[in-house]
Structure formats: structure tokens, C-alpha cells
Image 1 (cartoon, rainbow, N blue to C red):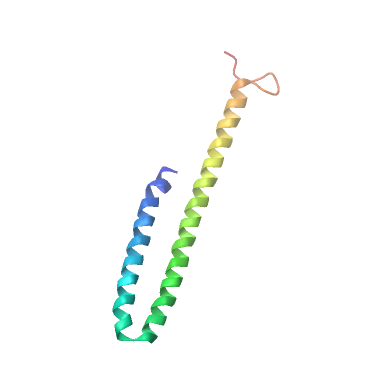
Image 2: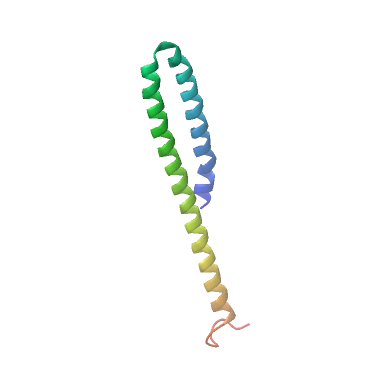
Length: 91
């Protein structure tokens, strides 16, 4: 989980860099040719969709890991408390 959280700022940085580069390219291309701008816009849309999918996948992975950790902690606490069968760890 720490790795995913640590890479999140990296993903954001990549998205910001891509957006800046695309804006610069679009501004330069607008002066050159309108048809090229259409191609650039299509490429930008594809890139944004791919980046969004990566971000969503990262978020889902984090949520799944958090849920699994919570479940494990609850199970450990329940077993340690000896709930449900009189067993478990007794002080």
C-alpha cells in the first residue's frame, strides 16, 4: 500500500507534464495546420483516458488493500478476544 501511495504523486506529476506538453504542442500546431490539431486532440483524448484508467486502477488497488487489512485486523481482534466459542487468547 505504501508503494501505491508513494507512486500516486508520480502519477499526478506525469499527468501534469503530459497536459503541459499537449497544451504547448496544440498552441504551436494551431499556427501550422488545423488538420494536425484534430490528430493531436484525438491523441490527447486517448492519453487522458489511459491515464485516468491507471489512476482508477491505483485507487481500486488501494481500497482493496485497505479493506483486506481491516478484515485481517477485525479477525485478529475477534480471535484474540475469544468471541464466539469461548476460545482465543486469554489474559
